[in-house]
Amino acid sequence: MDLAKKQHNVTEWVADFSDGLYAYAAQRVKDNHTAQDLVQETFLAAWRNVDGYTGEASVKTWLFTILKNKIIDQYRKASKRKTDSLDGDSPFFDEGDHWRDGFCPQDWGTNAASRMETKEFYAVFDGCKGKLKEVHSAVFTMKYLDGLESKEICKVLGLKSSNYWVLIHRAKVQLRACLEMNWFTR
Amino acid sequence: MVYPLKKMVMMISCKQAVDFISKKEEGRLALNQRIDLRGHLAICHFCRAFDRQNRLLSSVFHKRPDSVDVTLKAEEKQAIIKILEKAADS
Image (cartoon, rainbow over all chains, first blue to last red; front, side, top):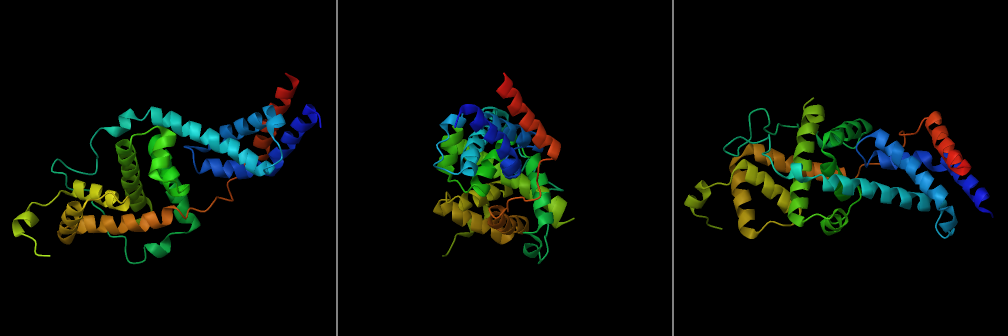
C-alpha cells in the first residue's frame, strides 16, 4: 500500500476511534479543550508516522499508545511548573494546626457509601478534580485512575518521593473537601 | 499496651494527624507514628471523620468508570479530518 493510501486510512480512523480517545483524555487532563487538542495531535502523529505502524497491535491500541504518551508529556510540563504548589500553608488548618472553622470534616451520614458509584457522583468528582492544580490532578490520576505505583509516578514525572508525597496528599485533602461541600453535605 | 498519660497529653495536631492518615495509606507510617495517630483519633471526632471518609474515597476513586457519554461533536471530528487533509496537501 502506498503512503497516500495509508494516510487516507488514518482519516477514516477518526470516525471509529476519536470518541474513545477523547473520553480517555478528558478524564485525564485539565479540561475538554486540552483533551480535544491531544486527540487531534494523536491523529496527526499517526498520520505522519503511519509507515511505522506495523499492524502488530490493533489500530486502536496503537492510537491509544500515542495518546498516552501525549498525556504524559502534559503531566511532565505541569510537574516542571510545580514549585509553587509545594509550599504555602494549607487553608484547612489554623495557626495551632487544628481544623479551621468552616473546614472541619462534617458528618456524611450513614448512607454516604451507597450514594457513590453513580453517574451523578462522578460528575461532581470530575468537577472537583478539575479544580485541582494541574500537577495535583496529574499525580492523583496516575495513582487512582491508572493504578501506578508511587515509584513509577516519581520516575515518569521526575519527582522526588517527598515531593510526590506532598502532591498526592494535598490532592486528596482538597478533593475530600470539595466533595463534602458539593456532594456529601449538599 | 499501657501507655503513659503524659505522652497522651502531648497529642499530635490535626494537621499532623491528617498527614499521618495519608502516610498510613501509602504504608509509610512508623510504629510510633501509628500509636500517636491512634491516640489522636481516640479524642478527635473531626479527624476520625476524616480518616473514615478518606478510606471510603480511596476505595472508590480507582473505580471511576470510563465515560461513555463524553463524545466529540461531528464538526469537531470534521475539523480533525480537515487538518489531516491539509497536512496531505502540504
